[in-house]
Image (cartoon, rainbow over all chains, first blue to last red; front, top):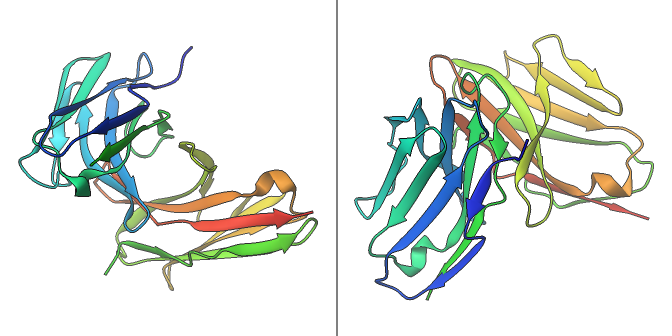
Length: 114
Length: 110
């Protein structure tokens, strides 16, 4: 079975543009997590879903960020408008049964906002 | 105060050496503990869970001290392939999210 799939792998955009990151979790997993990783702050949870329903979005930095999970096999993280401080690696992870169990991470999207 | 704190390193050790990392967590209600490994420019992957009585997986030993709220990872007989960043991870009771430390970077030198 394929692991967690993310696209694009790299994204370079100009400040003010809309950015959409995509994730396909492992089939059968009921939890999906979006993380952001920077050198200064490490890995931070942005939002997570259980059975496609957003459970905790307290990590979303501000209204410019939004996430959706329209079905069990697809999720998006959107930034509109993007800013240079949004530059980071964004990881999607999925698990079966919540955080007690292993989270499988995708390869990440490296976002650069100029 | 951060939920999870780690010494960022770097730790540079020769092959065959034993190296230990410590991590402290701030919330006494923390329930579950893990070590994840992240190779350069790759995604994190679970290395091992940490159990209350301590546990071992080959050359890796994890310990938990709830009274002092710290977790440790010991690597014996270091291999070049152990070079990576090791992330200390904590789950709090009743929550389904994980808190990650910023990681400790290990380089094993030939």
